[in-house]
Length: 386
Ligand SMILES: [Zn+2]
Image (cartoon, rainbow, N blue to C red; front, side):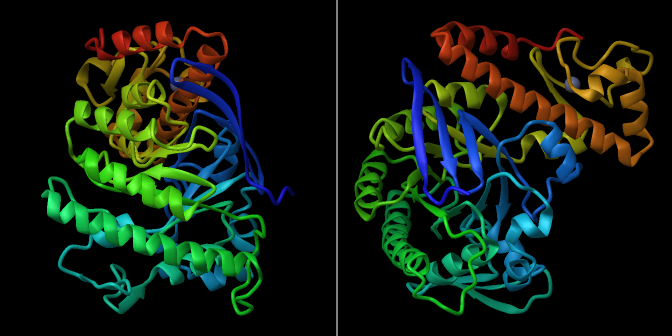
């Protein structure tokens, strides 16, 4: 097991980068999509199925796992890898986004956040230090700092104070991470010694705040950097503008992670602006709601027109769902509420996202990413033909 974080850029095409990120549990080919397994499980599929889909890395959430089953219990099970049986890389989000979403049930001060557990209402506290400890016990390959993510829209003043607090918390979170890495916190068992830590750039949709956040966060120094606080309701063109503006100021030699985005077209747009890593609940959540992604846009499988449609969901898709079942059957499973509906739909949607990233990587390697992006966006934005 490598204990060193690494990132190698294998090819570039415009601002798009084709790379390989190395973390403690292996390599991640970038640009990469990280399926979201908030509670150490990707909703709708098993860990084995996630591996069969070819995912290089899974995301889990420190906040949720701290509350249940508890990070100490996970540490005693050998960390998330021992606990889940997933042997490849894992990134844990800090839970900042989730805690700040608990409007009315949390109090923020300089020390951290006091909140009521969404499970049993008990009072809990998270600080930049405790979040680093939780993620050390979880044993993820990549830990995210604890940040303050403001809602959107937000005034400049509110975005500024959240960004500045995130910077101060970044310093504290990094100090704690370094103490943990140096073995100076003996009561915290760390199943993954080579854990890396990513900083998070905040500043909402204000470029001057993004600039300050980049400067301060890079000044603290992390293995890599994420762009947070986007994909929270702002228009797509605003998000793309902020992503492009922020990404070009981040160090070229480290991966850039756009948190929480997005639709398939968002992935292509962000790669063209220099983003390497993504996560989003859309492919799994929408699968359970019957919305399925194809190269010609998204379709709703519950639509009556699919009742007698014996074609595969997506003729171009090589996933087990499309190779085995018809639209008529998938609609029937959805309409009758069969458990296999969510499973088959999730397999297809995740395959679509992972396959799209594979096609993006090839296009960058061959130096044809601009063409690929134009064709993809053109096909995806057309109304689905049927
Ligand atoms: Zn498929």
